[in-house]
Amino acid sequence: MEFFFFFPDPFFNPHVQEDFLFHTFALMKIEQMYTSCLAEAAYYIESNGEAAIIDPIRETTPYLEKLKATGAKLKYVFETHFHADFVSGHIDLAKTTGAKIVFGPLAETKYDVLNAKDGEVFSIGKVKIKVLHTPGHTPESSCFLLTDETGKEHCLFTGDTLFIGDVGRPDLLDGKMTSAELASMMYDSLNNKIKPLADDILVYPAHGAGSSCGKSIGKETWSTLGQQKKTNYALQKMSREEFIKTVTEGLSAPPQYFFKDAMINKNGYDNIDAVMARNLKALSVEDFKKEVAAGALILDTRDPGTFEKGFIKGAVNMGLGGQYAIWLGTLIDINQKLVIVADEGKENDSILRAARVGFENVKGFLKGSLAAWTQAGNPVEKIQSITAQEFAEKIKSGSQNVLDVRKKSEFETAHVKGAELIELATLSENLNKLDKKKTYLIHCASGYRSMIASSIMKANGFENPVNVLGGFIQIKNTQAPVEIAAEASA
Image (cartoon, rainbow, N blue to C red):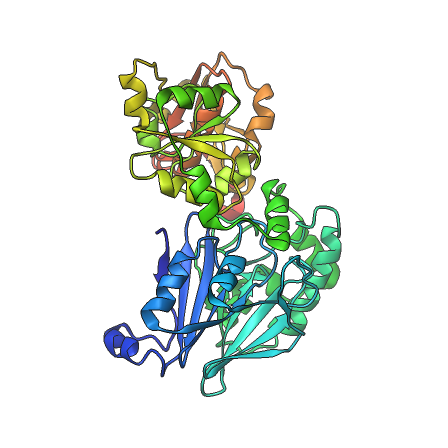
């Protein structure tokens, strides 16, 4: 499983871990279960034999295994809001365990939930969770304030209301409310509900860096409220008008799958086991070809370094080692039929992680991976990659076409002189601005996005996309001409 467990809680002492686990029902336990593919954090809370889970991802197995191992009973599944960037596991968890699903005020669903009142308190063992209705990211958005066994306000699960260094974007209601209206609501939520809380309260957000639910989320996955009051731009003193302008400017268009995932979470979904049984289908080479001929897109989830050495014509590369699910949802239509090429043993992971973001129209995977394809006598295509130093040598003449596929904010901080910026998220719709016969030296920050871009261009008939290994992180260490923003160099 692709989970990472963190224990940033002061009650957890790694030097007495055995004692802590032995007394698991006598002590409060909080675990951050971070899924890097989604840049998403779910939380497991346990006290005195009872447990709660906040913002679970779609597959329930990791949570059920944890409950089985500790013997705790799941009492509540808390949802901070209708997630737009992934399909939540709240419905399946509740059905399996009998736990109640809790949303804050204004959440309307087509399944049974407990709509908490603002300020309502729930008990989990010897700890309590207070619901703070904090509209702004969405109207139903709520934060959950945990009070420990001693009665001290200990931590705040902020969902997409407050991130580390950022706040949730207020433009995801697809025209139902304006971003200015939601930003105004967030202004009140931050100033009236969150800022008055004590500085030593821990902040546990639903997302980290890489998520499109914010515009500049920090790399940390937790903080203290005092630190955020000092450093988070959205928590600084400003007028309502200044705040609205600040949080709404510079927002790129949200991925289109966001609106569909939000509706899935609101209306309900198929059980994940049923989805996997339907989609995890081994295809022979001939069956694979038939699915492609019928309109399926080839999604190659192998590592970029492996992909470039040989792939099936038309394939788009999104390696499992990066933020696979985020880019899948951003670049591919959620209803698009897919066939998977994966390293042997990674087929299940490829299809499961696609289902996390609502991609369920997978027709199967190529049995035997690329080896089966080539052994059957079928041709493959390749993409050339060059090192950052080779890139620097090539652009000395100034006649090279450099394509930067990072975000605009990254580009504006520093970029290669003369580079053309087309963000990866908008590349497909801007391919008509490029010449298919020209050679393009393509880079991102580290090389993951640039290989996705190279594969998209190759699939669309570009003759010679060239990927720059290591991206801008390596380029800036060469003699390549780099322009740095004044504030970045200060």
